[in-house]
Amino acid sequence: MTVFALRHARRLQTVIATLVSHGYGPLLERLPLPFRLSFRKAKKMDDSRADLAVQTRQALEQLGPTFVKIGQILSTRVDLLPTEFITELEKLRERAGWVAYEEVAQVVEEELGAAPEEIFEDFSREPLASGSVAQVHSATYGGDPVAVKIQRPHIARVIRQDIEIVGFLSRLIHGHIPESRPYRLPDLARNFGRTLQKELDFSREADSIRLFARGFAGQDYVLIPRVYSEVSTRRVLTMSRIEGRRLDELDHLSGETRRRLASRALDMSMHQVMDMGIFHADPHTGNVLVVDEEYLALFDFGNIGVVDDESREDLTDLLAGVITRDYSFVAEVLADIGQPREDLDVREFRRDVMELFEYNYDKELDQLSLGHLLLQTMAVLRRHGIGMPSGYMALLRAVAVAESSARKIYPEMQLLAEIRPRIQSVMGRRRRADFDQFWITGVRRWNRRLGHWGQKIASLVDRAEGGDLSMRFRHVGLSSFLAGLDRIAQKIIIGLLIAALIIGGSLIIQIDRAPYLFGYPALGAITFLVAGVLGMVLLIGWRR
Image: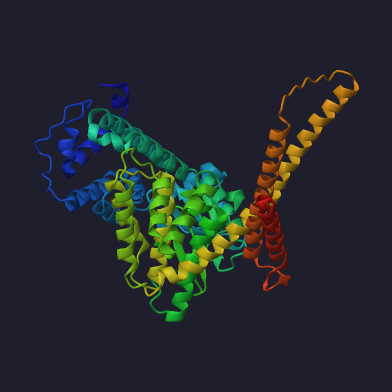
């Protein structure tokens, strides 16, 4: 038996026995496990995926917080798992009893140096909420109502041990079951470990809350808790307490109020992805509350995703392709994002994507579901052997869950009608940014080049003045050739200048700013006129 197996023998046996009892015996029999285990009493599974999916969820729930968290992360990987598993894993909830007040008080004292009653006023002995990693108590601090999130005692050790076991089993499966290798289970296990370790550090969550607060500073309808840094550590997080209603508790509101709140929920998600460059990677309905029938409060920032410029461009292009029904473009973007096989049949893949989106687009606008469409799209990608980076999956999943949350508030919401102006606004900002980039970085780039050329010319002049420059040149019968080459170069330069003027004029007209000439922005119209004149000069010169 290995050192690892000896160190974690009892927990490892519990994990394997639980998996065997839920139908994974045939898989585990193929592994060189470090101890003997009888598979004769293994549960017999039905052939259906649905049954295995149910058994998988039950096994994860039985194994505790680490495995529940892993299941919740897997429920976002629609690129890896069939629909039956995604649907079942989405039902996972952290079922955990309360930790005794004495244990909670000990954690507070270890982290903050004093008992809860000495730091907070009205610290509740019973929690407001309890999860597998932490529980939340209400209190008052400096006269302000606060919520104190306290990590369960010893939970970090339990999670670290389980992460090591998951890594150990993933390496065994990868090494001895060839059909599992395309899934790269050891890499997945490492990603799980990193995600869970981040959630254990409440100081990271505090930083994320501050980041979101800055990002939503101009959005009055979004409420982000305030962090009380002086009474927050890696295992204790003190935030302002915000009370409201869950998204599934709004039936008493009028249709117009629910429609407004649903639109704001969608705006909140789009603002994260398109403007802030970060997004809430666990945006289920329990993490959003409606306050005073007007505001949306966001909670639980332990799992945050980052959107780089390339990912934001890709998502914008995907949504723009869907809205304009350019499904060939959608297929092209998906293939660019993904990791296709060398033998990909591009034509067949494009046809499958077009059929899928045409079928869904023909539905009524209030019946179109981004989440369902995402599941179907991932099925097409799997069928054609196209993998998707995990970062993109988290991003797409967050958008789909945001749409689901908006529909919980207002089921009649017409998704495409709501998204269209937002995407058009993003595309407009992108065109203006491209124009600014052209003038700012483009001009500066040429300025730097001219500066370098000037230095080189100055150096040549200095060498000539000092008598250090010598040149030898000899030609025979090149005069006519050089003259023709000079004429060709002039025409090429004029052609390039015309092209640059047309492109620049187009960008200026898109910006649509006064003053106007002939009904168009004056600068753009003048640019086109100059391009026209140069074109005539070029045409006359060409005839000669």
